Length: 326
Image 1 (cartoon, rainbow, N blue to C red):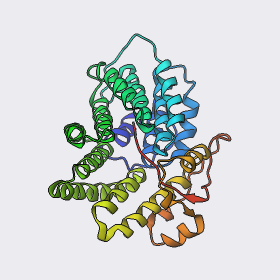
Image 2 (cartoon, rainbow, N blue to C red):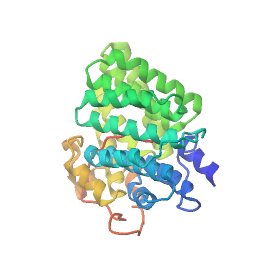
Image 3 (cartoon, rainbow, N blue to C red):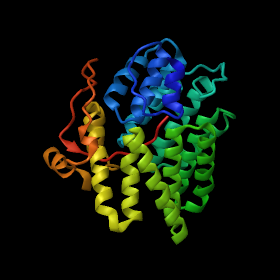
Image 4 (spheres, rainbow, N blue to C red):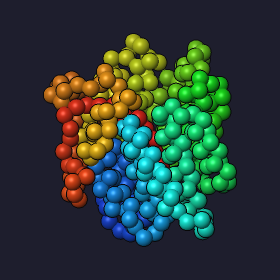
């Protein structure tokens, strides 16, 4: 079970349908897969239960993963509290060596990089750089930590207005993700590289950016990775002006499905976040009518019954969200 879940979470089959069975580690891996597929309500139910797991590493990983899901819908303040809790949960001693960073060192890297992304999301670039340096100082945390470190470094440089400085980090993230044959991380790395190239502004760079983004959208749809579909579709709306309306409709369809499968907390965060594009906030009926031919709308909401913090029903709006994933 664990090996199959690892393949879904960190390997070549992020589209595998998963259910919450097995050990606590299996349940965390299941939540990682669910989050990658945009099934935030089901993921939240699992992660919330794992926050009090007696294993401090698993509890920390659960907190930072839930933080990443909150951040993906623009909830940086909520994510910061979870990432801080993830870091505080960890002991000083380390027994590391897991190939995917599912260990104490990997959990510490996840928490620090999550805090860096939280700081970036609210414009605290100096704090973000300091947290990135702390994560970098951990040493070899495995391929996943290295990829995530490069993502956040690139994003900080982009936010600082230095796309040329971001480019080597984005390229390095993609090389490492491809070497690991991690389909979801490859797609995310290509998206970061596409955004970086687009910011560089040259004709050749923008053509490459469009090719990368088109490939990400195609594979994200194939694998059911809806949280990657919307930002790449909006990126393509900028890179391909003639097809902009179609790209925006596809983004709306993916976001509508993701928010239908989100828990109430995530939907509230998305509704109040400055990261949510207001142009995509439309009434539910209008969204359904406008994207009726989109296969995303055929996906049912998740059915989870674990308490008031989870939900099996969608909200009344189709909203945008931002991503950052474990």
